[in-house]
Length: 116
Image (tube, rainbow, N blue to C red; front, side, top):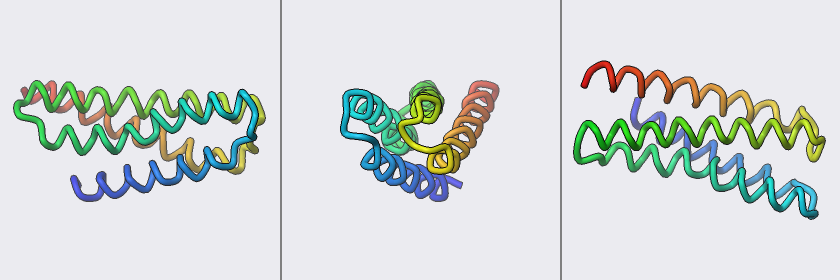
């Protein structure tokens, strides 16, 4: 599962980067794109970091950051879609993946806390 999530979160980050490159070149596009890039790429980076945790507490802490970043990415995607900067057909697949990743990492945090 670890390898699958590493690949999945990397693919997610790449899709976020591609989507941001399609945003309009105006203030809203730049600002929302900047926020989306930060949160969307942070999911994979922090997940990888969580796998190198030195303790159970550090693992849970890093995984909690991954959960928060995935959820924040949902927010930015919803804002981009609701403000009609890009069409919903372009946003919805990435929004679905972001929601799924949020659910996966939420479950992992809950289980890790329960088992510690």
